[in-house]
Length: 481
Image (cartoon, rainbow, N blue to C red; front, side, top):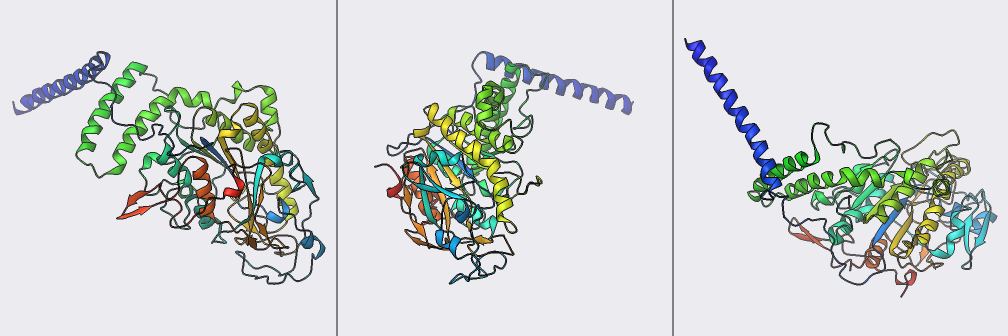
């Protein structure tokens, strides 16, 4: 008797629970159709916000050359280094790099030539990039703090050599929002993840809605888990999402100090919108054969990097605010792929020829494509690594890390084409004239995007933080007045 009562009670409980569940789903769908239960109307933290001051640029493409190219083998020509190869480098510190160097000058193995009306020197390994020097602003006097890849990349992205601080992409997204509500505002593309990985593009203490969407575009599905479940129609999925948002919004309202809850709500909405927009944005089949070949997609050496550069243009074209491409290229002719591909400790000739064959054609194509599509003047292109390399040798033919001098160039977005700013010493070992630190670079990029770097702040742990900390000067000499 007790068993029969228990079974009956269990059946009644099951039917009651099932009925309530089905009724809730049906009611949600009905309320949505009638407009009574609509998508949450809270303010979208990624909504476009006008720049505080007029500015030429709307977006950034950052071509990060992971592992750090040698300044004296790419864009900073040093005749004296060529003449004095094998002799003692005055003032050389064998501990400048991460390992130990010889203290003896190592000449560049490459031929050099001047290009364009500005007469900028470039190495022979960049035949395509060299065609665009009159569109570039070169800064030859960059320096940073760390001789180790991870802290150096953290600093170049966030201004700090330690983890936990927002990257420049997150700061810009926080300050300006996105031009497209159906795609992420900040996208990172990589093959092999660079040294330091996700913390490099972290949103730090900013709300996580400003975190980068990191993807590996080499696969068939650059962004995973975007497909709609087969058993759900668009209307049904929208109804379920609205119900989830309403429940989550009530939960968040009781916890006003949890900064990640609203970000989580927005992530659901963005994922919904991306289901139709993202596949189209990443579909390079829409591009002509000529365009694909211009970016080097038909070459084994350059197809992956070229794909990233072409996707970057397509994303910027669709209103994505900030796209960062981390070079992932073979660092030996044998095709081995490293997380720091430009890291030429053993053989600068073999390494830099291999890496340049990967990035040269796509980079030149990107600049040309942006100009042809009328996007160049409103898009900042940044090119460079996390530090430079030593002018004295490591081993017989390699170069160690060197944070004391390196070259970064900028193009588009109101930067002065053909500008050549700052200088390293006669051997390219140390920045000596108009020295430029990471904070200066960040201040200048923010300025070109319409933001005063001293005014873009976020209060955290009782203090107002900013990307440039308590430093940073806008490099007015390399931007159009």
